[in-house]
Amino acid sequence: MKPLITSSLMAVGAFLLAAGPALVAAQTSTSTGGPASAPAVDQHGPTIKDAYGKLFLIGTAGDIPGNYSSDELRLIKENFTVVTPENCMKPGPVHPEADTWNFQRPDALVKWCQDNDIAIHGHTLVWHGQTGNWFFQDANKEVLTQRLKDHISTLVGRYKGKIRSWDVVNEAINDGGNAQTAGTENLRRSNWLKIMGPDFLPLAFKFAHEADPKAKLFYNDYNIEAGAKHRSSMVLLKRLIKEGAPIYGVGIQGHWTTGRVPFAEIDKAISDYASLGLKVSISELDLTIRGASGGQLGGGGGRGARRNTPASPQDLKAQADDYAKLFSIFVKHKESIDRVTFWGLNDRRTWRFGQNPLIFDSNNLRKPAYVAIVDAMLHPNHDLANPAR
Ligand code: XIL
Image (tube, rainbow, N blue to C red; front, side):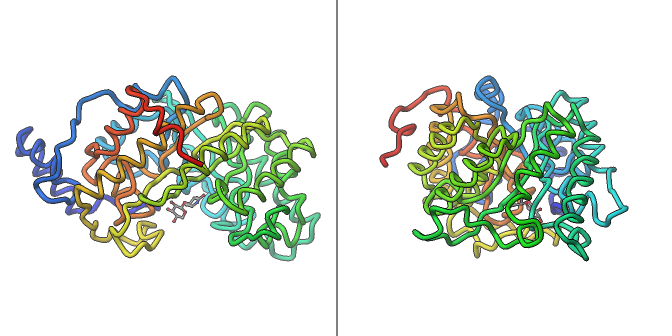
């Protein structure tokens, strides 16, 4: 669940509507919370969909249409070609008990996307998080395999032909790998692994493929672009391919921090995955602004809106520069990139609330990052696209 539009935002919106365009222009320069001297951002240039729509899918995550305002829904239609349900198709929300399915929000999302000609990326079939305990209760390998199969065939089957791609397994690799673990899959000790062993991965892919043979199937994880976890991801993906799992691509989540983005590793990781014959998605992109809050994650997860911490013009510029570098790399790899999806819509609807990570501010206005991303496509810069390794 995302933070609701608070009454204060609605009040700001109503005030702006009443005050007319002049005030909207003034608000542009201060809307991210920065001082009045923050540079005004052009709100009317080409959209990111104009700039990138022909290269790869460009997406946003959210449980739309839900409580989204008409402004927000318009923003989605104008800017994005694909939507990922942020929570409503995860095992916990959609299938909280063996005999309980909550299809209302997923159905509404699928209908809205179809009505508006926007593709859907399903998220996520197998995960250690947001998954009801009932899956694992009194389960041996056989019982859990059957529950997994029922879960996947019901969910993927319901939206057969409507959801173009799925994250089949999410975050199966351990954090904190080292030289020893790097040559192994280093799988997380989840209930899936404990009860089913490493077979749970290829089996999940098999069940998803049986339920919708045309859906494109992904393995999705964070921090897999660098270090020991990257090497483990290569070991795991090679096994899946060898065992005949119908895997189409790998999602690099992309929850990064301004000033600390591992550009060279990202550049190399995309090439590494492509060399296995896989497509790559940047599946959950957001770039927090360093120092903008305590750094806590998940602050926006439905526990009410916290005060948004102001970002300085310098912060916004540094964030824009890093986004421009990232997109320059993505353009260079466009043949291998399936999709780039932002994790949220604006700096209010984000799980990293308070850290200003996205390209629209809390009032749905374009931030400097937005313009920098469009510019990276319209005016390619070789140096940005080729970070030193
Ligand atoms: C997050 C959502 O954004 C939050 O609203 C929720 O409270 C927790 O999950 N990796 C993933 C996503 O694959 O599903 C997570 O989404 C963020 C990290």
